[in-house]
Length: 350
Image (cartoon, rainbow, N blue to C red; front, side, top):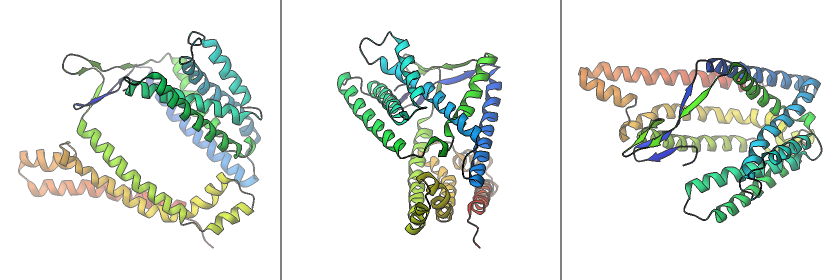
């Protein structure tokens, strides 16, 4: 698999992160920058709710951040894309110039086409790298053709979606928040001279050495519970959105609200009344379904308590009571948090 990740019957082998002592400042910067980005987003949203538009400094900063984020994303994407084009593999300056052009174009009326080109480059590079690593026996030409088709589809989807969006003054300043959340930790990383190395797993004679080896039972348990629970949650969300009366959406559209504003201000607040109760049940089921790890030999809570601990102590009543108390505590905490959240998002009716 790509990115030095390996999987076999012994488990999943992934690189082990090995930060140095200075990396603690980067982690602190990540926490502060995320809090700052959330605070700026909440402040800008409240200003728009009160005045009808985002503050002018936020709008101008969002435009600059949009260009910076476009350049930072397009530069590595175009650089990797040039590796697949004959004659451009040894010309990194061309990729940087193309990324700069895309960043400048994002400030003009050609921004939708710039984002479409960047979306094509990202899709092609990721798919081509993944498919070549997974299907090394296949002809590279056939893989590249499939990646090109997928890139064209993603570029078209990006173009259509961007053309339907409101002008930059009316859009949520997402690029600014991304730049705050990523730029501050990156600046601290450079200034402090922190280092983050990775110990890669290496295949030796009988097993892999180095990295982190995740047991196959853990991988199977996480994968199964994730797919199972995600399917139910997705159906809950779909049903909640479909439960909103169509007249509400039409009324919001008649008031001139954009698609994003209709979803945020009208559809989601009404849908959450239907989504949250079954969502709480799914979170409780997820906590209790983790006990299925005992069926596949993974040493989770039930396996350790009612297996190892019970066999060594012989105190069945105390061990079972302790197991029930742990699950009860997790369930009550989950229910309390979801009830608080349900009260927060509940619509205030007069």
